[in-house]
Structure formats: structure tokens, C-alpha cells
Length: 56
Image (cartoon, rainbow, N blue to C red):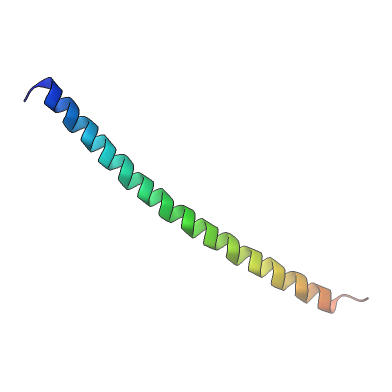
């Protein structure tokens, strides 16, 4: 195997590894976005409950 072929193999392996990492990061971003939605929903619910129990 010559150096050019080895270099192409290394580049291809790097591209594949980066693509896999990007997919994992996209999945994690989606999970974090959903967690933010959940936190926002809880904050809204707590705020509404506090509003209901606080004196006018």
C-alpha cells in the first residue's frame, strides 16, 4: 500500500468517525432541547401554582 492510498484511508476513517460523532451530538442536542421544554413546563406549572396560593 502506498502513502497516497494510506492517506485516503486515514481521511475516510476520519470522515466516518466525525460523521458518527456528529450524529451522536445531534441526538444529544435533541435530548437537551426536550429537557429544556420539560423544565419550562415545570417552571410554568410551579409559577401557576404559586400564583394560585399567593394572597392577592
